[in-house]
Image 1 (cartoon, rainbow, N blue to C red):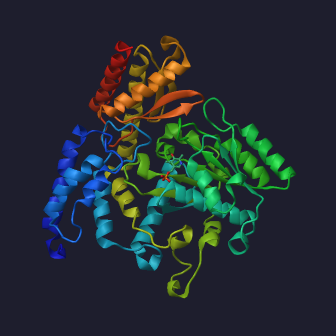
Image 2: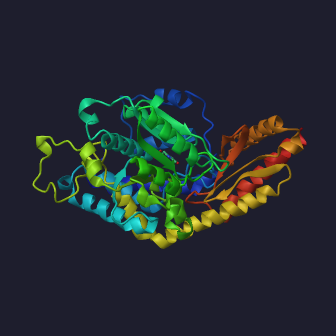
Image 3: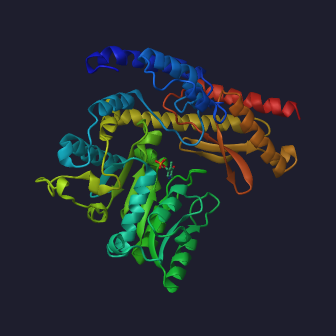
Length: 474
Ligand SMILES: *Cc1c(COP(=O)(O)O)cnc(C)c1O
């Protein structure tokens, strides 16, 4: 067993491991090549009844577990969305874990509650969130969206559903490109997934607002009750942006809750050039973005803003005797602002990131990522046989094999998939794909904390070499 008095000595071993991890990071295969059950079999070989030393465990970890990890902080990780960590954030996590405080109400750690309020207020003007909105940190965007939909449900049913159960006629709307967490939340909220309507999108992947208007009007005619619309700012497939203003006008007219899901793209709101993405936000009721994606704050840290904290609290507060305190009413008891009771001190890592990096340096890093993505897209567009299928936007673009040079779309799709598989198997980079209509496309995200011009060069070379190799073997 480890002793509190020897923390420095023991943690030095772990921090040395982390330093060596960072030093080796860009030499690891980006995506783990582990086969199903492989790591489990290794774990089963150890005698769990026999305690080991920290050194022995770190050695075991390095040998058996590390090969089973995909390296999300690897600069050639270009899949999904970034899940950025930073030294600032990781050091704050040391302290959060050491203190192990439960930040459910103000009294259980006043500084945690006040720092959370302070940081989220600080971020509001930088993001373009209205000054009178209030924020709370949630674990994930999925949880924040669930909180939004449950609050919308309560507002739509005059706060009766929590007591009486949910009527079967509530309706929730989002685009067909929206994140899967929306449909999941509609189900969990008791509204019923059959009452979730996916609205069509235009060619950019943004919601067709006219279709939304017609769906709402038709539902109302049929005795159904529109309850919530979710606008996606930065879709998962192609980072398309729904028009918050146009959707907001419809929601206002019909008295429908508007939730804005900017989980990934929200970080870009820090840059003035991208504030248009949420113009009309004053017509919305809630907004979520994930600092744990592009804002250098390691998972989990999701920022949720609401226009009316009163509606949020009326939905979630429940006051057992053992949590009654004298300060209630004067301070923020964040357990009433969401689903879980227990809460970690997540504001601390945001504070570390914002204080040590500084907001201007964060903005510079975002701008650098955007420029690197644009440069990489430009170079890939000049590789014969490949083309850009989604123009660069933020740190994202997509590309695929050109159908006309390989004899049609079917061949292009097959070869694009082959390109992805060979790239990922090469261990040099990790890319993910999506479908754009019938087209198989490769998503490219250039937003890792440790990305540089040189690492992007490596990514370009890998794509270029792999593609030429495929062509020469046709
Ligand atoms: C990533 C993402 C989510 C899910 O975020 P979690 O924090 O993992 O729940 C939801 N919506 C959008 C648009 C996303 O990009």
